[in-house]
Each structure stands twice: as structure tokens, then as C-alpha cells.
Image (cartoon, rainbow, N blue to C red; front, side, top):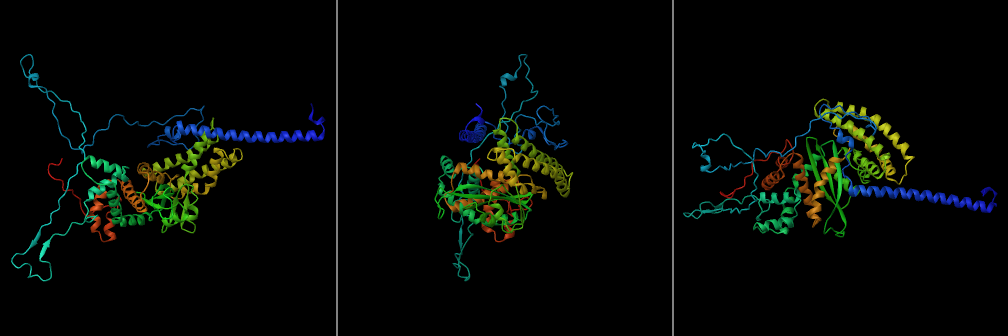
Length: 530
């Protein structure tokens, strides 16, 4: 039946119904597409590889002598030649040469050394293999003896200005009148904040060794030690602001006993990584929120480049300050990665990753030349701008074109929208040689705290959170400067009680070229203990 032959009221009703039905079908198709995306992404998250490493990063070694192309990677039907590279030899690594070695001889019986012909067999060689042993840690008590001296002849009456009794001064201790020594404190704190062993587990381990130290004592010692070495962190924060770049990130933490907040509410640990490139400084700061005012307070006195993720708190935090905000390409890449994994076939997500891969290829090539001394810092900066500008221009044009084609609420639409909204900050990393395309330096820095949080779960008090941040700062900065955390903290705790000036504190900062303690720290190990 021809719809045109129907009566006008009926015709209008049918056309309106068809239009409404078509609109509803389109809406449902969009909902189905979004749900399918979410399902595919959830399946990939649950069962697929969690790494965001691109295939191009796996096949391109970027080693010395490689010629890196910054063109788009070839399509599936094209062939590609992978540059030759040296593969690392597998197998077990040799034991460290500086480990003590004890030889054990496994010889045959004397009777077996006699040959059937009647002659003695002669040694013609030997076989050597190494086995690694472990001696469980041991604890001992140092009894500090201070003899008293007095004059029996005059009872000290000849010296009116001094006590008649002489005794040596009490050795300075970071926890006066306590049983904790510098080495014991260093061990407890490294166990918790470096190896993620909570105090209650340490209490159990010590108990098995016959040592009784409660978790409460450990927590109180950590807070007292933290207060004693607070000047070291303050000085580190000052040095951190002297660099041209600061990377920042934040992560939630639950802190008990905060004033005006419930015990289930979130507080935050802010991470800052800065200082000079050859002696990086990593600091952690406990704050009750991740508001802009917190970030602004942490950045006071700094001028330079601030590289972060897309958190809304950062732009208002640096408003009016001499700070240039730089974005993170890793966060943009993550969104295209999700769009790619949620798509049944290569599409916008894959193309977006290919564009970002160009930028990383340029970075790797030039950064390698800079490291090898083939480029000066200024030449590196000029070459990077020259090579990335065309990619930025074409990439943005592609984003604007694709934004008109994709579903805004879909993963691809969200990836494009995020990248365009962050565009001005994303392209700024070429302005300084110390900047990289992403904020991974800060994200890697926050990881030790996150690992520890999974083990100890909560901070028992605001003071506990404050000094946990302090010890994470000292330990992670020491690690970043190739300084052993235990030896560093033991040395710091040993000399801290006798430090009287900022110059002395500066000698104890865990930084390359600066760490210069007044002398070695020795533990009075009794003979025969090991």
C-alpha cells in the first residue's frame, strides 16, 4: 500500500511513528555499541595483557647504531626489516665476587686413590661449583659501661668549680634513654618502608628469634626518629626546588584519627620528583586532600616546569606562579590503548597509538644521541622541536577530523576529547631538555608507596602518615642515587643527635656528590657471634 494514498491524519501518524522508531533504534544501537566496548575492555582487563607497551616498542630495540624511523609503522600486509641487535645471554648470573667464600673439599677415600696396578692415582684436575648459604640475622645486647672516678685523697675539695666525681658523657642517641640503636632503627624502618613489612609482622619475626619488641614501640620509635631527622627532609625539599623540572603525582591513603574526618575518609600522599637530573630528589607529603591549595603550598618557591597528569587541581594551583604546566602523553596513550583493546578491529584507537608512537620514536632516538654525547642539550632541544612539530600539526588535524566521526561517549571519543582538552600542555615537553613526553618518573616514584599500602593498609595516626612520608622520601631518594638505604639510615641516625648546622645536615643528604658523612659507623659485634 502506498503511504501517499492514505488519509493525511493516518499518514502523519505513520511518519511520526517511523521517525520515533528510527530514533529509538539509533539510540539503542549506540547503547549496544557502548556496552560491547565496555565488555571487550573488561574482558581484556581481566584476561589480557596489562602492559601498554606497543608492538613497535617491542620490535625496535633502539640500541646504539640503530636507525630509527619516525614514519608510521607498516600495515599488516607490508613487510618490515627489524634492525640487528645483540641478545643478552641467558642462564644463571654469577655470584658477586665480593661475597666471602669458604672452600669445602669433597675428596675420595684413600683406598680409592690406589690403582689396581698398585700405583697411587695422581690428581689431574678438579671440579668447582658454588653454593650460596644464608646465616639468619642475629641480635645482641651492647652493655654500655661508664665507670665513675673520684679522688680518695681530697674527695674533690681542691676543685671547687667541678663535680668531685668524673664519668664519661652518655653517648648521643637518636632516642635518648631507649634501647633502640641506630642500626636496629634502620633495620626496622627499611623493613617497613623499603621492603613493605608492617610492624606487626616484624614483631612476629622478632619474637621467633627471642626478641620482644612490640609494634607500638616500633611505631613510636619511627615517629621519634622522624622528628629528629626532619631537617634532612626540609633541606631536601629546598634542593628539590632548585631544579628546572618537578614531576608530581598523588595517591589516596587512609589515616586514622584525623580531626574532623571519619576513619574511612580519604587523605592523600603527594609525590614530587625534582632536583638535578644526575642527583634526583623524590619526596612524599601527607595532606588531607588533593585540592589545589595543597599543591600550591607544596610548590611555593619553585619556578620552572611542572609535569603532571590531567588532574583538575594543578592549573588553579599554579595560577599566577612562574610555573609552566606540562602534560603527560602516557595518560593520553592509555585512553587510546583502551579504545584499541575494546574495538573488534583496528580503528581510531590503533591510529591514535601509531601517532603517539611517532613521538616516542623521536624521543628515543634523540635521547640516545644525547646520552652518547652526540648531541648537546641545546641541539637536542632544537632537533626535538624540529622533528615533533610536523607530527603535532598532523596529529591534531587527525584528532579534529576523527572527533566528528566517532561517538563522543565511546572510548575512542573520550580518548580524542581528552587529548584535545590537554593539547596545550601535552606539546610543551619540547621546551626543555630535562622534560620527557610523559610523567612516568612520578608514577614510578609513587609505586613503592602503593606497594607498601597494600601491606600495611592504613596509617594509624596523622603523625604516622607524616613520618611515613619522610622515610619514604629518604629511602627512595637514596635508592635513586645508588645509596644503600640501610647503611644510609644507620649513618643518619648515628650522627643526627650531634648535628648543629645546616652545613652538617647537607653532608648527610642522600645525593650523589653531596653525601659525605663525618666518618664510618661501626657496630660493636662481639667475637664469635658469626
